[in-house]
Each structure stands twice: as C-alpha cells, then as structure tokens.
Length: 127
Image (tube, rainbow, N blue to C red; front, side, top):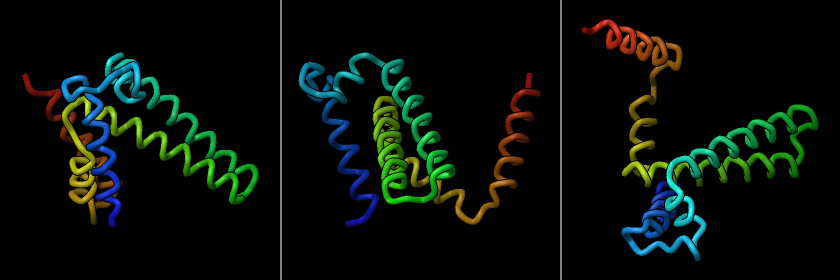
C-alpha cells in the first residue's frame, strides 16, 4: 500500500459524500461541510493551518517529545483532510497535487518562486 493509495481512498470517500452522490449532511461531517459551501471548509482549513503552526511551535518550546510530535502529526492530518475536501469541491484530487509536486521535483525553491513572480509580473503587464 502506498501513500497515493491512502490519499486516493480518502478522496473517493469524500467524493461519495457530495450531494450529487447521495451524501447526507445530517449523517456525514464531510457532506455537511460540502453542503455549507466553501466558506465552511475554507474556514476549517484556516483553523487547521493555525493549529498546525501552534503544534510545531509547541515542539520548538518543549522539545520533540512523542506527545508533541503526535499532536503535530494529528494537526497536519486534519489540515490535509480538510484540504482534500476543498480539492473535491473544486473538481481536483490528490493526484493533481502529487503531479504538481513531481513537476517541481529537482527545481530549486528559490528559482521556482522567482519564476512564478516573473510570470505574475508578465501577466499583469499584458493589456
């Protein structure tokens, strides 16, 4: 079993919770978030991102204990989970993210950022 398999299985479950696929907001947390719309799941992503940062800072202050590392892993799992809901809502999947990460593989992060800035600047200058 690979990570891709786990992410794909979770993405399929999330997909099955969409209203069009019979997802019931009364019985499913994912269906409820999707039913409420982007504001609901985007708010959760913001909350989970903040909690991830706070968990990492706890490790910085308290040392890399098993308990604090577990807290960080749990918060990242929550962040990924809610991000998968957003991807599903917008018709994307974990494979799209993995493809983007693979595209970036071997590229300097500094070079990548400079290229994106240049592309943005070029797009802004077009009439």
